[in-house]
Length: 404
Image (cartoon, rainbow, N blue to C red; front, side):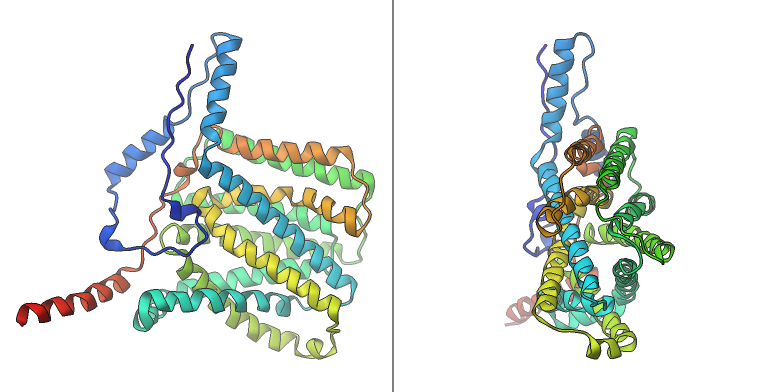
């Protein structure tokens, strides 16, 4: 029996491109509800059905299903998720090393990140929208980005602070709480129809995380006791809750607005909030802190890892979803082992590699039935008021030529 592999619907390249996109409303076709309904129906039929008539046909249908899953969009989302996972591990390691050196300024640490994002994306937004258009953006939508920036910054602050009180493994485990929070708010914003295979994929990934934790327990890696562990765990849970809400909200925004607008606005307000909080809470500690070569190098590595994280994450939001990003990060403990082999002389335990394989299988299972295109509508547009002002400005020469 020949199994026909249908061609999956692919979105525009801007969904997976790191280069800031330019959207021209005059050349974009806005889909009606009927068109979107037909598109969703096409997605539902995109996965080839499984044939249970014989083992040979079943294996052929499974192979066809895997081929339909491993599209270019999915592979990029999978690889991007692992890149983000490496970045998360890098930030965890650098924070741990800074704390060991007695350097703990969580607000100061993240300030460098937001300054870098602001310097790159805010001027580009002004270039695209014009100074007046950017001003209208501040007046009309600035309050939304301010709230999101405040939530994002406080989530980062809580997560970085928790490392002072609890251990690395507890932080990784409790951070998984962001997954159900993110799934809940994604459902509120975009109303995706979660299939049971997606819930199974999340469960498999969390099971892989449990195997990683068990491996650490058996090898006694990173399980140092602390006197204020409960306090650190509670701070991490609060930070993970804010992370889940932030990721779902940011996915909703980047699916409707250009990436440079979202990153530029969030980083600008977060930089202001960060600077105020750092100067209020850490101005004395800044003067007393040690600023040697090791600390500066760790701060640079921390900022670089988070910078890559913030650039790649919105692309995964578009290519897959914020929930998919959250479960991709569960593999960070495996990459923590790779760092530990060189930094802490960890001995690799065989269960680590099985756990990593289980997490990857969970990521594939997540899209076993559903497709990345079904996770939400992707139609990024400039704000209407920016487009109207630009079209009015462009129509002036035409009127003058007609009068001549």
